Image (tube, rainbow, N blue to C red; front, side):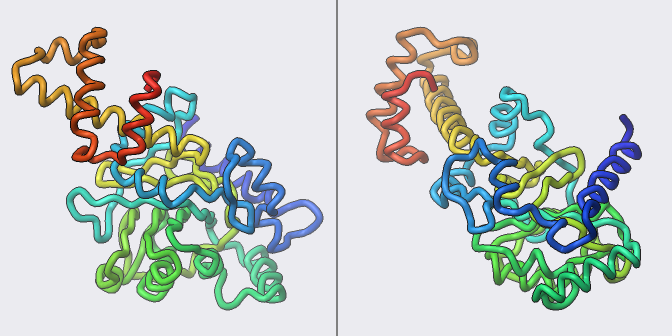
Length: 315
């Protein structure tokens, strides 16, 4: 299926979400029960709206995970559409990463009749201002605002200086925005704000309408759910289902430690690269365990995680 057909299918699904007993603001947002049902594999804490709430401790550990490690863990589990690359970035220094919980939104080309009904209904329910600000009002600390703006440039820059400031004030984090932004210099002046965007354009938002908040969202070739853990660096973005977040961290930590051990032993002349690159012998595994015990306090992995690795050799 080509990109045009896929995009048409996404629009059709979005419009179906607005159909039924009438077009209402609630139709655009999953209820708590619906969101729990969509993310039923997550067994941990949730936000009041039902969005999975991966612990801060996991988010902290995720900052050291390589994208390749996260991607390979998800791919092995059958999740083959969780990565998207080819971004322009705002405030992304060498080695910097963006990690957080996804709050999702979807935009479509503006259609006046649908746009008016959604806006009027939302205002009746207490929402303030334009709909492009409503998802931003919902952001919590350590959220990442993930939005699909159908890649349009002219008439579609939704995020500029004002909304960028609000995003960072609410989340202390950044954005993954499948669209264009404006006010680049102002966004760059927001210390700590990180953005992954398609580009920038001097126009403003007059040709977009918000149709969904906290629903499944397509970002390029990837699908993202509310509460997914966003892991982004200069290589691209991976959206990690919350039920796999801790396992991704653990597997990454094991790979990191084994690589450190292997590099050291190669430099010392203990093993050859060929030995390190193939399945380790029992003696090499014992050597690795002793190395972990001897260097536990100096390694870049929490001590309790190293102790868990030593107990569970399946990693």
